[in-house]
Amino acid sequence: MTQTSNRLFDEFARLVTDATGVAQGLKREIDTMVKTQAERFLADMDLVRRDEFEVVREMASAARAENERLTARLAELEEKLAGGKPAPKAAKKAPKAKDDGEA
Image (cartoon, rainbow, N blue to C red; front, top):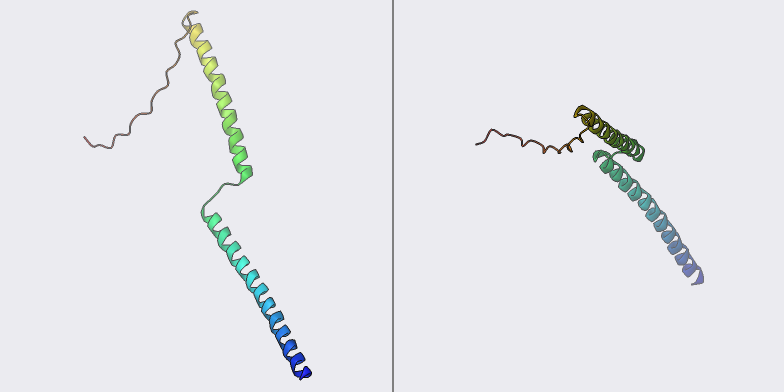
């Protein structure tokens, strides 16, 4: 009887070991599939990389500073042209409404 029960326990231990190996393999396979799907999803979203974003942000900041400098220079030149009178502040123009051709 002891040999039969030992053999039964050995078979059970082998079965559990095999099941654990199968579960680990399944986990790796699922992880790979999820990672592949996530990469495909992110690639389809056409997201910008962080370094590209930083470069564009720096360009926008530089353009904003240049715009402010040129606005001040324009006001200075308009004041000179007006003969020393302070130039009126330039009003921001509202964007024109798009005409759809509908009346």
